[in-house]
Image (cartoon, rainbow, N blue to C red):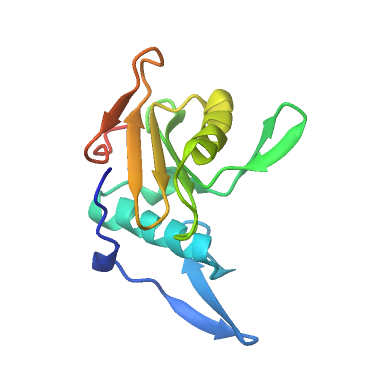
Length: 148
């Protein structure tokens, strides 16, 4: 498990029509603040502000095809040189456990995207793996520094 300090980053919040919204600095728009979105936004701020991942190479909630199904991944960080997927993050609300179901969901996206790194996070727990050798997945103790 990886320790991620979300408290070092702040989110921009507002009330709109009685609902709390958060400003997504990657998508550049206001989003309804659900428990999962809260985790996603804190993770984005951690990647950008703490680990210096370039926001211009991050995609959030983009649609991909999984067979005949259209799904949306949470976060993908791209490699600078080839603009290929480098890190795939799946976010869950804090009350959703990270388990085999969560991992299987991430693996479905990975089969389409083929990212080097996987990240599962629910705000309480975070797990990251180096999947560059799919025959020998390595679970990491820290998030990778961006060098894409």
